[in-house]
Image (tube, rainbow, N blue to C red; front, side, top):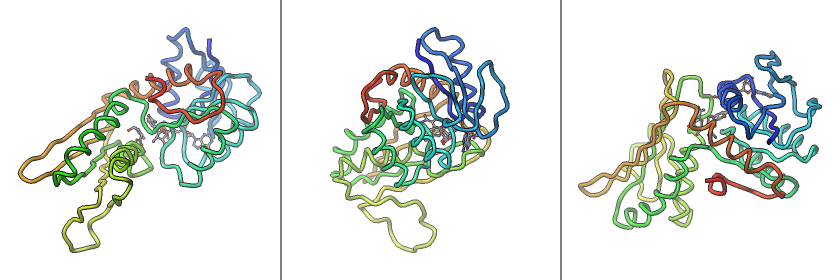
Length: 250
Ligand SMILES: NC(=O)C1=CN([C@@H]2O[C@H](COP(=O)(O)OP(=O)(O)OC[C@H]3O[C@@H](n4cnc5c(N)ncnc54)[C@H](O)[C@@H]3O)[C@@H](O)[C@H]2O)C=CC1
Ligand SMILES: O=C(O)C1=N[C@H](C(=O)O)C[C@H](O)C1
């Protein structure tokens, strides 16, 4: 059985994963880390991974970008593989995660659901055909009112997947309110909506001459992300240092 430390254990995703792990014989949450150390479950909770003295095979992280620098350093120091799911990371943090992967196994993914990981591939095929035919690409994401980062990590991952097919030559446009000019061809628009309890919606819109194609993924519960994270943790435990992604798990 894989022993996991839940980083961000007292948050929304931390609690869904804790519930899922209780019914899964292949994984056990043996400790939690959270800035609020209230013990909500049957495992001990520590303020930081550095302070955690419980042995484990892997860390699952759903916390906050501000927590990720210390987390990565602590995983390297303790030589524990990490499933990094927190979004809104800076370029410097992404570089730090890449450097850490030389020392420990790091699986980073902005979205652990099966559907989005398929969509990341589908948009590559669509882009190859549609953009040369004159279609513009826009991404619209919608999330609950408590989400702190925008645009979502998933929207950025979708944009990156599309842009790879365009030799990374397209710029991301997050805000059209400050200019009065037609849309540039070589851009990908990304818009964020926040409200209520929306779990997560991502639409990729290809708008062409007289026709529009839309791909849409809707997450109806956080369980889709939690299931992916649990499978990723089982996959990553015991793996050699390196960078891994959900494509390695699915
Ligand atoms: N990759 C994926 O599939 C998904 C990623 N996410 C991302 O996961 C992150 C967490 O999401 P939620 O659980 O909804 O947020 P949340 O705000 O409900 O939970 C975050 C938890 O992290 C804790 N935390 C914050 N700073 C900390 C620190 N410095 N040290 C230790 N713990 C700290 C908070 O106290 C809280 O309990 C977000 O960045 C979100 O975008 C969310 C869902 C799916
Ligand atoms: O904060 C969330 O809730 C989610 N965050 C991830 C993101 O930023 O892409 C994934 C999912 O959409 C839910």
